[in-house]
Image 1: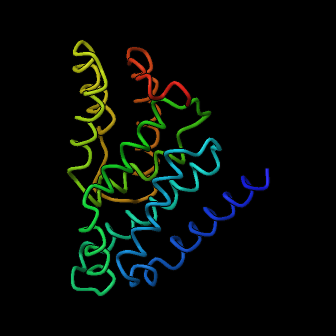
Image 2: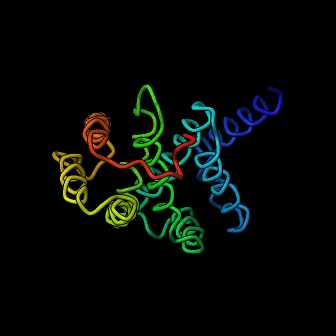
Length: 196
């Protein structure tokens, strides 16, 4: 029980740093920064507590939102630093996206709302992420389900704009819940997710 409380506090602390001080934190060296974002990967991957998963998802959302919002300021010191860090781990956004999508599809969650938020910001920060995630999902599914998944992904993106305005985020979150409901009808759950 004590370890669980310490773990929650640790991820809540990191979330506060990434929410309120990301402009400062991106100025650290790449090794330190990558260890911080790797903590979110670990939290999304192994946490059994939904609150830790949600906190990690929020932190990833702060990171991707920061990158997207600063993409039109490529010379800004924080933008340069973040791009440098991400260049050392070029697949981190795709990894986060796939992990979050796996949580949406395979975990027994009451709601996907908090997990769906970073999916949009990641797609906007790194546009090729969605295509890479589609390929990863399709590799886990029988051929007969591929077209159904492609259609579900297309439906998820209907009327979604390239912005992070609240109405667009809300619409996307609704689409993610619809995506989840649709794929639950036909998806084959990989054995590696049986424990979730």
